[in-house]
Image 1 (cartoon, rainbow over the protein chains, first blue to last red):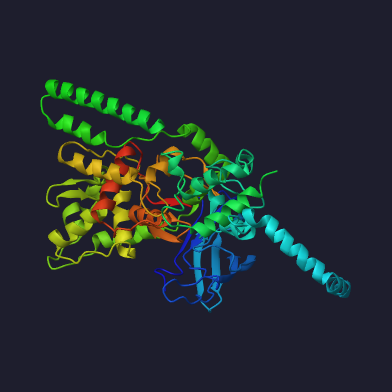
Image 2 (image 1 turned 120 degrees about the horizontal axis):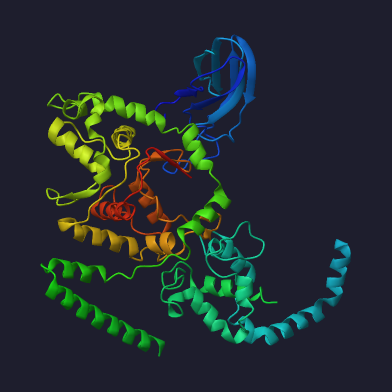
Length: 111
Length: 128
Length: 286
């Protein structure tokens, strides 16, 4: 298993005004095996192992959900825009096809 | 349609055989050194074989390289009499250009003489 | 006929060089400089087919600024930086020390240390690369086991300590005893090798900016300032020497092991010709 699988980085702008549309940038370490790659040493196919579901919750409500496939690159980067109209936690959950759940919460604090 | 062809073949059988033999005799001096153009095309476009398209333009290839000259244009300048030179370019281009980037396909045994022959035959099909 | 003329030309060039060398010898304080000139003259340097500006224009038109933007927004190698910082403070080995014991908290005193590497080391004797220096330090000063090259910890520690020099220009020196190793590196860079009979220079100097199939061949400027770097093709972080080995494999040439003399000399040469570039670790490349 690769080192540090499921490690997450979420970046928000430093200062957020209330009602501002902010860019949230996320990065997760994951091998995202397609299931088509061959291991050169063993000459066998590496089984598929990728994230297929990403959900974003803002203050408890689901605001965005993405369905990913094996076509997404290793260590996927995702960014999206949110209107920061309340002080609330932003929770992002990644689920992979082997049942792994990786999540991280950051606090959005508009001034 | 298939049946028609079958019948036709049956009738023309002896004549076709004679025609084939005549053609073979006529083509003998050429076919003695001519390879298989279809195999040659595969060699030119396969990464593990010739991989000409890494550097040269060839028709019907997705994004060929642009390091070497366009081979369709280049081949217009060669006649059948220059076949030797075309073979030499592929076998070891350093004879014509000592500082060339082109790999010596024959000298370094990247391709067999037979494969180079097929390749040259394919290149001559690019002549208009 | 042509060969004859080129032979003649070579003869005259040699004669002129010998004259120049003897002239230099007569006027320079030591004979060392003349000897260096002679060694350097064995290699014919190639000239680029296009200016760096033209190359960059082509690069921008073909790839755009994708990787630069990706590196800024979220480089997966950033995680290695965090781990490297922890490793720098971690006590290991028989002497009960960490990097931080000698080099200050978070090894911050090593700021700027990476700019002069690779450099000549009389104890080897040969070229000391930054990765090799860290391992030597671990063995001699800490009494710890050396980290395996290209392993996660080794890359993380190297990357973290190198990142302390971010934004500072590379200033590698080839004076004195380092000179022969620089020449060896240059020979490695210009020597035709492998079944395909390529050299590093023929692609990255002469044909930089052209396309090999769908890859734009990169110019050797900015080739040494961002390692260890995250590479999209690998899907992970790797060192410059791993990249060298990848290139050698594509040339179907013999691949010397990591941190072997040839690869160290090559790294020395490549870093020297990129003197003045600002270190930017971790990088991100295709």
